[in-house]
Amino acid sequence: MNSVVAQFSAVVIDGTIHMRVLHARSSGESTSSLSRREFLAAGAGGAMASLMPNAAEADPVSAATQQTDARAVVDVVLTVNGRDHRTAIDSRTTLLDALREHLQLTGTKKGCDHGQCGACTVLSGGKPVLACLTLALTAQRQQITTIEGLAKAGVLHPMQQAFVDQDALQCGYCTPGQIMSAVGCVTTGHANSDAAIREYMSGNLCRCAAYPNIVAAIKQAQPQLRKDA
Image (cartoon, rainbow, N blue to C red; front, top):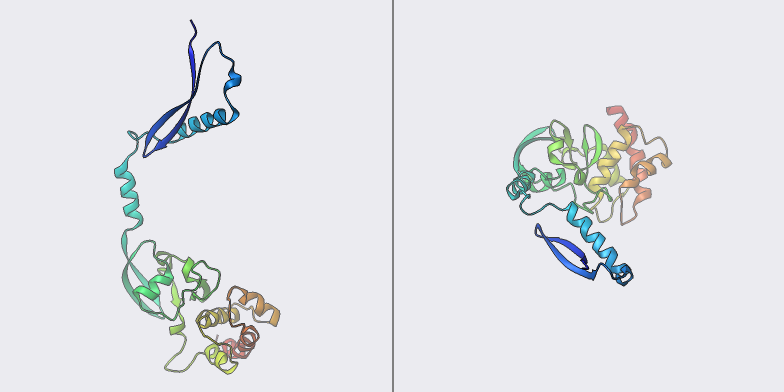
C-alpha cells in the first residue's frame, strides 16, 4: 500500500498558523514533479512557522503594557538659558520639540528633523548638539543654551553682532543654528583658520549660500569671545 507525501506552505496571520497544501504524491511517485518554486515556498513557510510564536503563546497584555510604557508621560526639569523649566512630556520627546512645543522657545528651528541640516543646533554644556536627535530626558542636568539665551540685558552677543555686521544671513531660517554652532566653533578651538572654520561648520546648511560671510562673522567675533572666556 502506498503512503501519501504532501508538501505544505505555512504562514502566520494574527498569531495563527495557516497551512496550505502545495503538492501531494504517493510514495511511489517521482519527486521530480515538485517544482523548484514549490520546494522553496514550502521551506520558507516552514521556517516562518518555526520562528513566529503561536497565538496561544503570545501575551497581548504584556505587549500593550510595553507600548504604553514607551509613550508614558514623564516629568522632566530642563535647565535652559540659566532657568529651570519643569514640564510633563512624552518620554520619546526630542529636546527640539520640548523647547518649541513645551517651553515656547521657538528660536531653535526644525529643519530636516533628521540631524542633517543643523538648524536645530543648541549648546549643551557649551558644546553644540543637534536638538532633533537628542531626547529631552537625556538633557536633564545639562546646561542648555538656545539662541534666546545669548543676548544679555538687551545687548547682542558678539557672534550675533558679527552676523549682522558681516551680512551673514539672508532668509534667516538657518541663522539661529549657524550662530550656536559658530559660538561652539570658537569656544572649542576650531576657528584658527578659514579651512578649520569651514570644516567645523560643514554640518550647518545654508540654502542662501551665505557661507563666506559666515566665515567672516566667526573671524570677527573670535577675539572678543576669547577675551570673554
